[in-house]
Amino acid sequence: MNDSIDAPQIAEAEPQLVAMLHITVKRSEIREVMGPGIGEVMAALAAQGIAPIGPWFTHHLKRPSDIFDFDVCVPTATPVAAVGRVRPEQLPAVKVARTIYRGPYEGLAAAWGELLKWITAEGLTPASDLFERYIIDPKSNPDPASWRTELSRPLVV
Image (cartoon, rainbow, N blue to C red; front, side, top):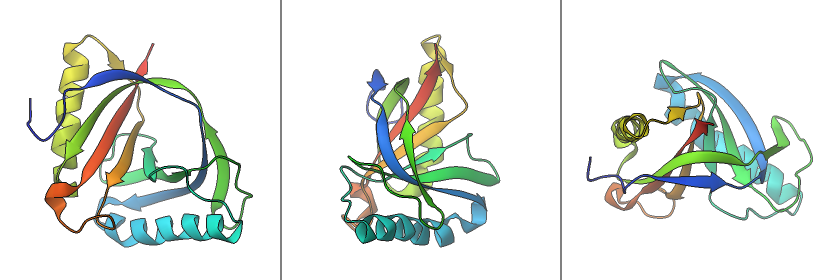
């Protein structure tokens, strides 16, 4: 197993209220839209006096390829009112395979590959979507070696 990910585990993700913004973009444009997308969600929350209750994350509706089809999500304790492209959502409880990846974003694809190998070796079936929760990101610490991304792949049960 790649030493940049922790030993994968099966976990139960709890239902979660989020402020969500949907983005579909070419892989080559992801860096141009991610920051503004996060900023748009955070501005909607701030305008409504709602504080995030945890790190922001992305919910990819399918494994990224040449096109990224995903939601930027910020967890909240109360629903956000829809404004612009930001809307309220409640993510359902789901069983997931989960690990923590340590390192720069360029290594995420390999880390996902390792998690998928583990899922397959365990005889489990992954759903088509996946989650990346940015626990320590560039805003928290500029050193890519310190970045931590929680990878969660829902499982078909």
